[in-house]
Length: 107
Image (tube, rainbow, N blue to C red; front, side, top):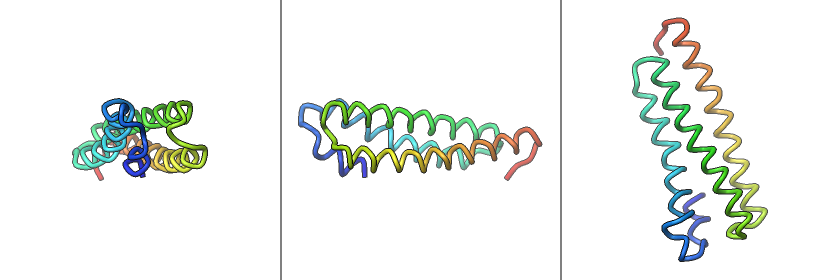
């Protein structure tokens, strides 16, 4: 969705907010994958935290895109809704992995 929406951004933003938003969204999924292959709950939790941070960067960039009128209200709400869903899932994963760490368990 982010790639589709940022295709409509101004050409002079090609190396600005367009790239930043695309990197952030890829960072979210990449850190989830990398964390899932770690052996301890603590390591897994750390990568989920990094993914969450990238998600919050994306939220900030989405708000800036709305302010700059690069996206409309509908697109903003569409992105915001997806960010909220992913955020909730990441929070649940973080709690799960932290509980594993505190109980010295491995998944």
